[in-house]
Amino acid sequence: MTRSTDRSVAAFERASRVLVGGVNSPVRAFAAVGGEPLFISRACGSKIYDLDDNEYIDYVSSYGPTILGHAPEAVVEAIGLAARKGTSFGAPTLAEVMLAELVISAIDSIEKVRFTNSGTEAVMTAIRLARGVTGRDKIVKCIGCYHGHSDGLLVQAGSGATTLGVPSSPGVPAGATADTILAPFNSVEAVSQIFSQAGGQIAAVIVEPVAGNMGVVPPADGYLQTLRDICDQAGALLIFDEVMTGFRVAPGGAQQLYNVRPDITTLGKIIGGGMPVGAVGGPAKIMDHLAPLGPVYQAGTLSGNPAAMSAGLASLNEIASDPDFYSLLERKSAELEAGLREAANQAGLGEKVVINRVGSMLCCFFSALPVTDYASATACDTRAFAAYFNGMLNNGVYIPPSQFEAMFVSAAHTSDDIAATQQAATEAFKAAADVM
Ligand code: PLP
Image (cartoon, rainbow, N blue to C red; front, side):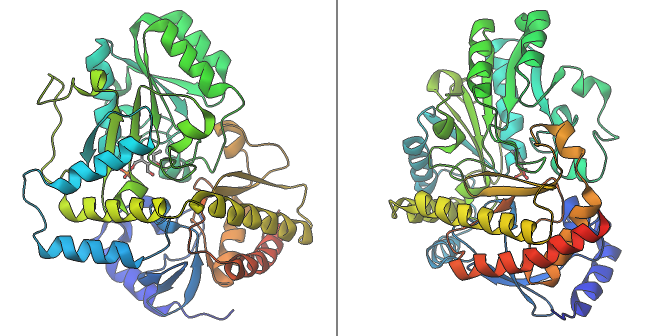
């Protein structure tokens, strides 16, 4: 495919003069894959268009929120209707109540909700809540899991932090992470050992139940249940960060898929229908420690914003209106996985590519060995990934510009999209094979 990107290149130059690195979130800068980022002019359904009017099949899906595809009619209409009535009041609205009711009806472990503006804020609140409830300070986090960019959690985080090779960040004081204990994802032994040494001081274990910020890494059999058991024995809380997996891998999130009940759940992405939203949820006996009922402080000028709540409501209602929504998504995602495997085989990379998938989250690693944690994810050939990424882009498929992000399938992807993706992937895998 011959495509001009002149307008995106010019926009990036202009952006780089006024925005740090030309972007407002590091992974968007394409630093890990080379070249200039596409500047997006519009998107509709499964397709996204850049300023040069190139069309791509989009699997970035805004890093997860757009599970219905881009600009679904019901969501766009709901945002418009809400905005016309006023964009922010600093006072309660019924939309907040209705969205909370939907979240509670979908996720068994949640009786009460607090909405925030982002996943980062939701996780910050969850950690403070866990510390406030238990009266303990230490938290256990998995290496390579990303829980937003707050100080205490920016230690060996995945996502952009991994892509840029910055395992933690200057500006984070040692004191802020002194109570964060690290464990490799999927290692029961590591968590057991940590608890045997410091169990009585640990407020919570926080985990992405399906790791989606070191590429996609599913939990090993029994891993999440073991975390549950260890937390129970030590009186610590278990936090599932379902910002990515909530309403993505099942209506009730990964906790439904794996049948493990956390004490606190964080949400974001899909529940905002593409608008900025996060949420913390759990049983009333935990959630009621938050202000104004309890002493654990948390607040937000724009929290529960009416336009964002309306977008979330419209999205979740749309999902719920189709009883086959998740089985269809699973079928398409399995079709995509099979297509990518076939493409890798055709390029002679059958034994050198690992495809991890949980529902509509998936990721190709350039590795001959299984990818089960951060160490095995970062051992993959990222040069091959960069070649694969650019091969996909040149053939009309937009995937995340980092080995350590997930591709997301949406309800708007069609069988034709998936067939075209397989074709593009055959070329992209050949490009990767050339540099391996
Ligand atoms: N938690 C997880 C699991 C995430 O994937 C992310 C973002 O990708 C966050 C938290 C942070 O959410 P946000 O980017 O909305 O602050």
